[in-house]
Image 1: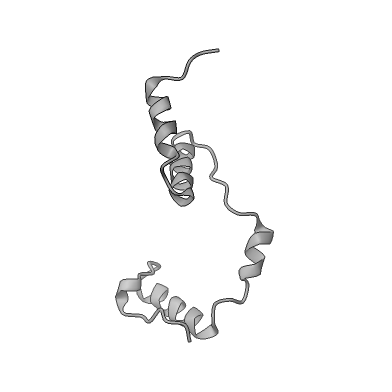
Image 2: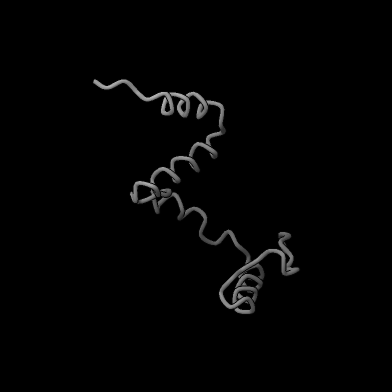
Length: 83
């Protein structure tokens, strides 16, 4: 079996120092370099989020997207506070 290159060994050593979120970002970058699909959470995990955004917040988001020609931005002065 081939020995890992010095670069690969250094990457692996440094990955242990990153947070799980940062490690996931690195994995996603590697997958994109390899043109492999990035896997997200299973759909049934996302179902528990259904209905957690208030109607008012959804209206603000819709209006912001429409005003920004499809580009939503929190810097447009819209409130992000829970209602």
